[in-house]
Image (cartoon, rainbow, N blue to C red; front, side, top):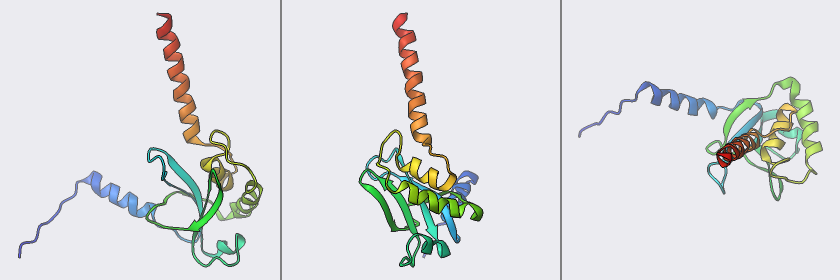
Length: 154
């Protein structure tokens, strides 16, 4: 029987370590993201609730949940570690505000540019209603529009 050894370079090892680290979730609330189901180049955001904080959202929850917003509402799904990547953990002192911000946001309608999944998740976890993806698209769009105007005049 012949055994084949696989050797990894430093970049591959760092990528493996990053993946392992991004999937370690201790008790707390986390801003999380994954590839969109519908458009893989776009990221879908939510926040994960792990451990004793579950009871603040629903007393019947006994396993980690990810709360996320889609165009058909806010969902609280089982938290699958294989799909979601940790962006950041919110500090324990900010958890009461995160719970209040969740309740405030529940009734807000989905809007791709003004209140999408990333706006929702970042507002709950950081208090800032922003979407870096929308900012990037708008920024690149403006640059493209300006470039078009400059080329059009020439």
